[in-house]
Structures are given as C-alpha cells and as structure tokens.
Amino acid sequence: MSVRDNLRKKYNDTQRRILFYLHSGISKGKHYFKAKYIAKDLGLSAKEVGTNLRILVDICDELRIIPWSYSNSTTWMVISKGL
Image 1 (spheres, helix red, strand yellow):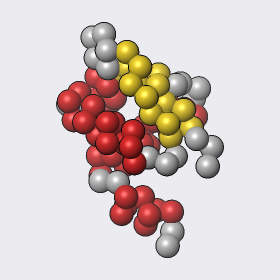
Image 2: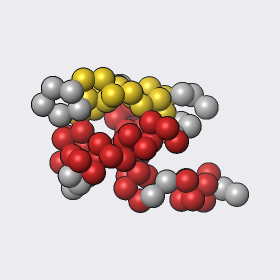
Image 3: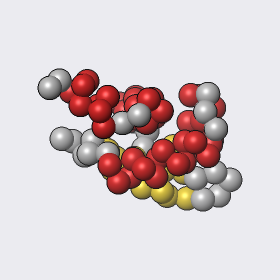
Image 4: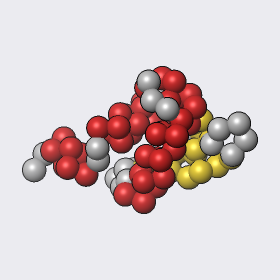
C-alpha cells in the first residue's frame, strides 16, 4: 500500500488539508499555528480546524501537535516526529 493510500484511509479530507498546511509551514521554519489563521487560509471555520486538530493530536504519527495557548484563538505547537 502506498503512503498516499494510507493517508486517504487514515485521515478525512479536512484533516489531510490541515496536515499539508502544517507540513508546509514546518518546512518554512514555523512551529506555532493559530487555528483562526489556518481556517482563513484553508476556507474553514476556526471551530472545524480546532475539532480536527484535536483528533489529529491522537491519531497523527507524523507530527506532534500540542495545544499551546488559548488567547484569542488556540495556538498550536507542531513538531515533526521525523519518522
């Protein structure tokens, strides 16, 4: 089974879009992401982003996703697990 097929089975479309966004940010040196800015960039609601990030905290093997700060929208710290 290819990596792409595995991602399709493990994550829904919204989660894949969020993961791609996070991977892209990490490759540019970012490690902190505000849910409201992810939502704006992806055309989602902040609640939708937050709900999916909370799911990804538990199921994502590629990234370590940690809720970091709650002022004016949740900020998430994201670190590559380097698998």
